[in-house]
Length: 139
Image (cartoon, rainbow, N blue to C red; front, side, top):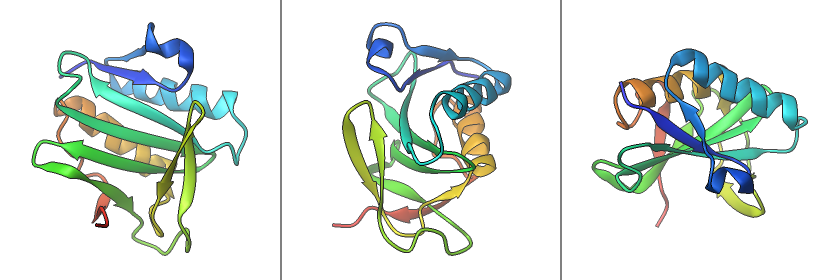
């Protein structure tokens, strides 16, 4: 199992949140949900600690829902989470510190799916999680 570094505030640039277990994943998501109100749409960048340039999982948290974007390991253009039930009909914006990122329609999934995907990303050392459905990046 890998160790992950998570970033969601400017202070994390020098001191990321270290994620080494499923309990750490739950703690990370709980901390974000406690710190930011519903509607804040916070984006967390999650990297494999010993291979930060190999792949990236962007993890959005907004109350009881969130989004995912994966790039790396054979998916360098990137993929977005795709809800199995219709969710957001229009693109949604999630925020990493002061930068905004747009996610396509039907990319918001339950927070339980987000959590399962991050746990799998941790367990596989950075492979694209199968715990979520995916849709291709446009363009």
